[in-house]
Image 1 (tube, helix red, strand yellow):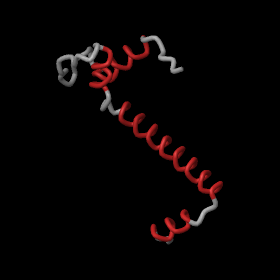
Image 2 (cartoon, rainbow, N blue to C red):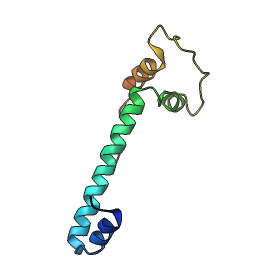
Image 3 (cartoon, one colour):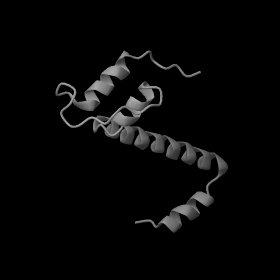
Image 4 (tube, rainbow, N blue to C red):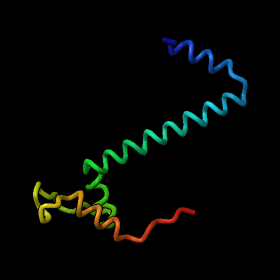
Length: 91
């Protein structure tokens, strides 16, 4: 196995074009991992309080206990509200 020190030295020795390719690849890898983590957090309901806060104008609604909301839970209600919103277009 190659050590971190050896990898660092190899990176420092790369020509500029290959270094740019490596940076691009690492950036894309970071974004892919970030997307997977956000997706996992969303599916697990860990982002529901943030979604509720955003949809309520920055005001956090009262905490819901488990089982409230007709058996669907906070994830289902937050997701339903999110899908009813107008899509955000970035320019």
